[in-house]
Image 1: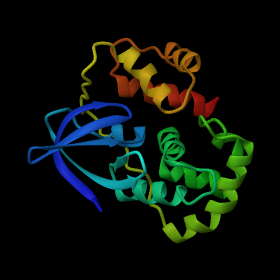
Image 2 (image 1 turned 120 degrees about the vertical axis):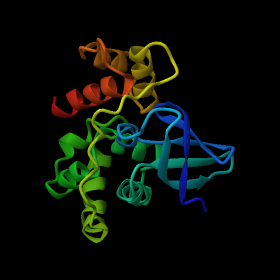
Image 3 (image 1 turned 45 degrees about the vertical axis):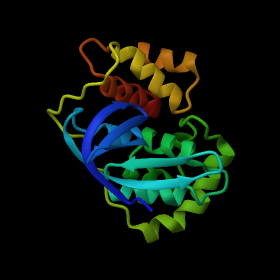
Length: 202
Protein backbone atom coordinates (compact mmCIF):
# COMPACT_ATOMS: atom_id res chain seq x y z
CA UNK A 1 0.00 0.00 0.00
CA UNK A 2 1.31 3.45 -0.93
CA UNK A 3 0.40 5.77 1.94
CA UNK A 4 2.40 8.92 1.26
CA UNK A 5 4.48 10.51 -1.48
CA UNK A 6 7.09 13.24 -1.24
CA UNK A 7 8.56 14.63 -4.43
CA UNK A 8 8.50 17.28 -7.13
CA UNK A 9 5.35 18.26 -8.97
CA UNK A 10 5.81 17.56 -12.68
CA UNK A 11 2.43 18.85 -13.85
CA UNK A 12 -1.05 19.46 -12.54
CA UNK A 13 -4.22 19.61 -14.54
CA UNK A 14 -7.25 19.18 -12.25
CA UNK A 15 -8.16 16.58 -11.24
CA UNK A 16 -4.85 14.99 -12.34
CA UNK A 17 -1.26 15.59 -11.33
CA UNK A 18 2.13 13.86 -11.46
CA UNK A 19 4.72 13.79 -8.71
CA UNK A 20 8.32 12.76 -9.43
CA UNK A 21 9.72 10.70 -6.55
CA UNK A 22 13.42 9.98 -7.15
CA UNK A 23 12.93 9.59 -10.89
CA UNK A 24 9.63 7.72 -10.77
CA UNK A 25 6.55 9.66 -11.89
CA UNK A 26 3.39 8.89 -9.92
CA UNK A 27 0.10 9.90 -11.55
CA UNK A 28 -2.61 10.84 -9.07
CA UNK A 29 -6.17 12.09 -8.97
CA UNK A 30 -6.95 14.73 -6.36
CA UNK A 31 -9.92 16.85 -5.24
CA UNK A 32 -9.88 20.61 -5.74
CA UNK A 33 -9.43 21.04 -1.99
CA UNK A 34 -5.95 19.60 -2.51
CA UNK A 35 -5.21 21.58 -5.69
CA UNK A 36 -5.90 24.87 -3.90
CA UNK A 37 -2.91 24.14 -1.65
CA UNK A 38 -0.41 22.76 -4.16
CA UNK A 39 2.74 24.71 -4.97
CA UNK A 40 3.81 25.37 -8.56
CA UNK A 41 5.29 22.65 -10.80
CA UNK A 42 8.94 22.09 -10.01
CA UNK A 43 8.44 22.55 -6.28
CA UNK A 44 8.34 19.88 -3.58
CA UNK A 45 5.12 18.53 -2.13
CA UNK A 46 4.05 15.83 0.32
CA UNK A 47 0.74 14.09 -0.30
CA UNK A 48 -1.19 11.47 1.63
CA UNK A 49 -2.39 8.79 -0.78
CA UNK A 50 -5.01 6.12 -1.22
CA UNK A 51 -4.47 3.27 -3.69
CA UNK A 52 -7.56 1.75 -5.30
CA UNK A 53 -7.05 -1.56 -7.09
CA UNK A 54 -9.63 -2.41 -9.73
CA UNK A 55 -9.83 -5.13 -12.35
CA UNK A 56 -8.91 -2.67 -15.10
CA UNK A 57 -6.58 -0.25 -13.32
CA UNK A 58 -4.66 0.77 -10.22
CA UNK A 59 -5.64 4.34 -9.32
CA UNK A 60 -3.71 6.47 -6.86
CA UNK A 61 -5.50 9.36 -5.14
CA UNK A 62 -3.58 12.19 -3.47
CA UNK A 63 -4.63 14.47 -0.62
CA UNK A 64 -3.03 17.55 0.93
CA UNK A 65 -3.72 16.39 4.49
CA UNK A 66 -4.75 13.24 6.31
CA UNK A 67 -8.21 14.56 7.21
CA UNK A 68 -9.10 14.75 3.50
CA UNK A 69 -7.93 11.19 2.96
CA UNK A 70 -9.77 9.96 6.05
CA UNK A 71 -13.02 11.51 4.86
CA UNK A 72 -12.48 10.14 1.33
CA UNK A 73 -11.99 6.61 2.67
CA UNK A 74 -15.04 6.89 4.90
CA UNK A 75 -17.20 8.15 2.02
CA UNK A 76 -16.24 5.09 -0.02
CA UNK A 77 -17.96 2.92 2.60
CA UNK A 78 -21.29 4.65 2.01
CA UNK A 79 -23.62 2.70 -0.25
CA UNK A 80 -23.74 4.21 -3.74
CA UNK A 81 -20.69 6.45 -3.27
CA UNK A 82 -17.64 5.69 -5.41
CA UNK A 83 -14.29 7.40 -5.79
CA UNK A 84 -15.50 9.88 -8.42
CA UNK A 85 -18.38 11.04 -6.26
CA UNK A 86 -16.16 11.24 -3.17
CA UNK A 87 -13.70 13.46 -5.10
CA UNK A 88 -16.58 15.65 -6.26
CA UNK A 89 -17.72 16.06 -2.65
CA UNK A 90 -14.26 17.06 -1.45
CA UNK A 91 -13.95 19.44 -4.40
CA UNK A 92 -17.27 21.12 -3.69
CA UNK A 93 -16.80 21.55 0.06
CA UNK A 94 -14.09 21.13 2.67
CA UNK A 95 -14.10 18.58 5.47
CA UNK A 96 -15.46 21.09 7.99
CA UNK A 97 -18.28 22.21 5.68
CA UNK A 98 -19.23 18.62 4.88
CA UNK A 99 -19.38 17.80 8.59
CA UNK A 100 -21.64 20.82 9.11
CA UNK A 101 -23.97 19.69 6.30
CA UNK A 102 -24.28 16.22 7.80
CA UNK A 103 -24.78 17.41 11.36
CA UNK A 104 -27.41 19.98 10.33
CA UNK A 105 -29.00 17.58 7.82
CA UNK A 106 -28.48 20.15 5.07
CA UNK A 107 -29.27 17.90 2.10
CA UNK A 108 -29.93 20.95 -0.09
CA UNK A 109 -26.23 21.84 -0.01
CA UNK A 110 -25.22 18.25 -0.77
CA UNK A 111 -27.43 17.91 -3.86
CA UNK A 112 -25.60 20.86 -5.45
CA UNK A 113 -22.63 18.53 -5.87
CA UNK A 114 -22.72 16.84 -9.32
CA UNK A 115 -23.86 13.23 -9.13
CA UNK A 116 -25.62 13.59 -5.76
CA UNK A 117 -29.38 13.32 -5.86
CA UNK A 118 -31.83 13.69 -3.01
CA UNK A 119 -31.69 10.02 -1.99
CA UNK A 120 -27.91 9.93 -1.99
CA UNK A 121 -27.80 13.13 0.07
CA UNK A 122 -30.20 11.66 2.60
CA UNK A 123 -28.14 8.45 2.74
CA UNK A 124 -24.97 10.46 3.34
CA UNK A 125 -26.58 12.29 6.24
CA UNK A 126 -27.83 9.05 7.84
CA UNK A 127 -24.70 6.94 7.31
CA UNK A 128 -22.09 9.64 7.97
CA UNK A 129 -23.59 11.21 11.10
CA UNK A 130 -22.21 8.62 13.54
CA UNK A 131 -19.02 8.08 11.54
CA UNK A 132 -18.09 11.77 11.65
CA UNK A 133 -18.16 11.72 15.44
CA UNK A 134 -15.62 8.89 15.44
CA UNK A 135 -13.42 10.53 12.79
CA UNK A 136 -12.94 13.76 14.77
CA UNK A 137 -12.10 15.65 11.59
CA UNK A 138 -10.22 18.95 12.00
CA UNK A 139 -11.06 22.00 9.98
CA UNK A 140 -9.85 21.98 6.42
CA UNK A 141 -6.48 23.56 5.72
CA UNK A 142 -6.93 27.00 4.13
CA UNK A 143 -5.49 27.63 0.72
CA UNK A 144 -1.99 29.02 0.77
CA UNK A 145 -1.81 32.71 0.03
CA UNK A 146 0.71 34.24 -2.31
CA UNK A 147 1.49 30.95 -4.08
CA UNK A 148 1.21 31.31 -7.82
CA UNK A 149 0.07 28.07 -9.45
CA UNK A 150 0.83 27.42 -13.08
CA UNK A 151 -0.80 24.84 -15.34
CA UNK A 152 0.61 23.55 -18.58
CA UNK A 153 -2.22 24.55 -20.91
CA UNK A 154 -2.49 28.05 -22.36
CA UNK A 155 -6.05 28.91 -21.37
CA UNK A 156 -7.02 28.98 -17.67
CA UNK A 157 -10.69 29.28 -18.68
CA UNK A 158 -10.53 26.15 -20.84
CA UNK A 159 -8.66 24.34 -18.08
CA UNK A 160 -11.33 25.32 -15.57
CA UNK A 161 -14.15 24.07 -17.79
CA UNK A 162 -12.32 20.79 -18.37
CA UNK A 163 -11.72 20.30 -14.66
CA UNK A 164 -15.38 20.91 -13.80
CA UNK A 165 -16.43 18.39 -16.46
CA UNK A 166 -13.98 15.87 -14.98
CA UNK A 167 -15.59 16.48 -11.59
CA UNK A 168 -18.99 15.48 -12.98
CA UNK A 169 -20.57 18.68 -14.27
CA UNK A 170 -22.11 18.61 -17.74
CA UNK A 171 -20.09 20.58 -20.35
CA UNK A 172 -22.80 23.21 -20.82
CA UNK A 173 -23.18 23.66 -17.07
CA UNK A 174 -19.41 23.88 -16.57
CA UNK A 175 -19.14 26.53 -19.29
CA UNK A 176 -21.99 28.52 -17.73
CA UNK A 177 -20.36 28.37 -14.28
CA UNK A 178 -17.01 29.58 -15.64
CA UNK A 179 -18.55 32.35 -17.74
CA UNK A 180 -20.19 33.72 -14.58
CA UNK A 181 -16.77 34.25 -13.01
CA UNK A 182 -14.84 37.50 -13.75
CA UNK A 183 -11.80 35.44 -14.72
CA UNK A 184 -9.42 38.01 -16.21
CA UNK A 185 -5.96 37.57 -14.70
CA UNK A 186 -7.01 34.51 -12.69
CA UNK A 187 -5.33 31.11 -12.69
CA UNK A 188 -7.34 27.96 -13.39
CA UNK A 189 -7.64 26.90 -9.76
CA UNK A 190 -8.89 30.36 -8.80
CA UNK A 191 -11.58 30.22 -11.50
CA UNK A 192 -12.64 26.73 -10.42
CA UNK A 193 -12.81 27.76 -6.80
CA UNK A 194 -14.97 30.80 -7.62
CA UNK A 195 -17.24 28.71 -9.83
CA UNK A 196 -17.72 26.03 -7.16
CA UNK A 197 -18.32 28.70 -4.51
CA UNK A 198 -21.05 30.31 -6.62
CA UNK A 199 -22.83 26.95 -6.87
CA UNK A 200 -22.52 26.34 -3.13
CA UNK A 201 -24.21 29.61 -2.22
CA UNK A 202 -26.81 29.61 -4.98
